[in-house]
Each structure stands twice: as structure tokens, then as C-alpha cells.
Length: 178
Image (tube, rainbow, N blue to C red; front, side, top):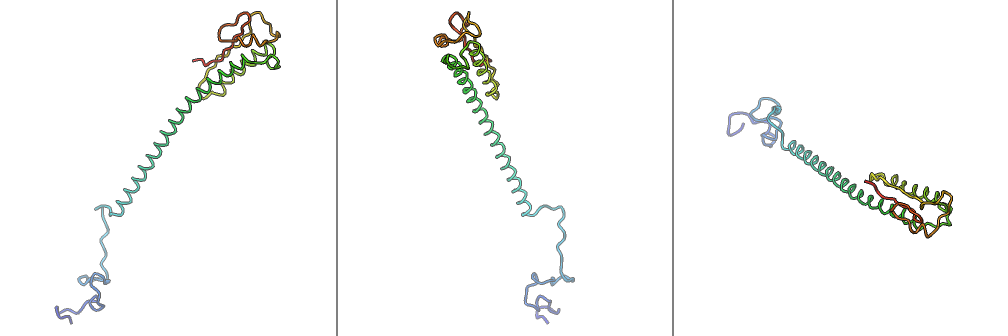
């Protein structure tokens, strides 16, 4: 018997372990006491930690997505400005080539061929730079008094400008229209 009480020793005392580690409690009458199921009292610390981690992950994902959208928008706006500048340079190049065309080239050795060739080149810019909403005004006219099959001359081609065609001077216009 136990010296402190008149009761017989518990199983925990017989094995040398404290009552908290034994399969039964010294005060319980059953083999093992069970915890009462958790009601709606609240979440455990681990559950709260998992919820906070999930919310933080979603917030980080949202920040990354918004940043990508902003970067893409800025890139598109910067690209559009560069494309508009490129379209203007291309239009100026068409005019320069029309003024310096060689009368020996079969593509534009007559006034009709010169008009058709450079009008088509200018109008193609509208297709090439369609992403910039480019509208092209293409006007290539021979000097007054020249027929379709009259040959082009270097002197007359060099005098081509944006003004209306006149005697000895063709008109060459390839510009953006707004």
C-alpha cells in the first residue's frame, strides 16, 4: 500500500511514470480519458498560420499580376510612339526615292510607271504600320503636259515636291493624314 493514502497504488505508480504519461488518469475510472471534441470555440494556432500564409500568397500574386499589366501597357505605349516615327521616316524615304529615281530603271522609266510605282510604295506603308492607325496621303503626279508613255528625266524628277504639279515639275506627296 501507498504510505500517503489507504488506496492501492495506481498503474502509473506501479510502472514508475507520472500519471499524465500513463494510459489512464489516477482520478479517472475508465481506461483513457478523451478530449472533448472542439466545438465552435475557434481555430488553433496552426490553422490561423495557414490562413494567413494563404492570404499573403494571394496578395503577392495580385501584386505581381498588376505589375506585369502596368509594364506591358508602358511597353506598348512606348512602342507605338517609335512605330509612328518609323512610319514618318518611311514616308520621307519614299519621297526621296521618287525624286532620285533613275530614268533608266524599267520600274519608273515612264511617267505612268513612276506614278503607279511610288503611289503603291506609299500606300503600302499604311499596311506595314497599320498598328499605328496610319492614314496615308499618296499623290504622285507627272508634270503638266506629259503623257503616260513619256520618259522621265533626272532633272524633272529632282524638282518633284509637295506643291501641285506644273510644267517641268512633278508632284510627290507621301504623308500621314490625320
